[in-house]
Length: 219
Image (cartoon, rainbow, N blue to C red; front, side, top):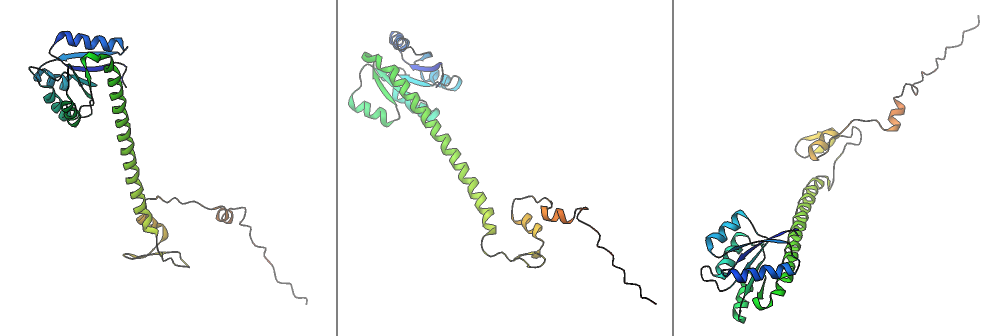
């Protein structure tokens, strides 16, 4: 959650807007609030100054609150949208939630607005974190599937010559083991000596065999 939240307030009564900001200041919220009351101004703010939360009156004369909600769900579906209104009937409240509003607060109970905003922002952060985890999970699943495809190349019977150690490829016939592995896996082979072979090829180990001369015959 940001230290300073950006609030876009859709309200056509300046006095009500001041009451809303005062209630948020009383709750010790740190915010920047931009008030609009027309569709054009609302669209401009969404484009140039994306808000962290949108607060809207319901009964606007110039710009209907449900129209603003529809625009918000299209342009910024993850941004919390909260209705703050003087009165809201049960049917209108149900419609608000069905259309995507996070909450609604009556102007007579503005002390409930700050908790509603904080709760909505926490839920948004949780959704963002959950989507990130799901994306990481999907990436891991993709990587595991790719690894499984490579591993499957070595399942089943793998013909190998008992003498020269060549391996049989169904398409290319018998091939040296290193050629087969490079072709059927994502490994890079390096040539090294195991301790036993290194000892066998060491100059110290290569001691010349003693020369035995035949005995001289006595005359």
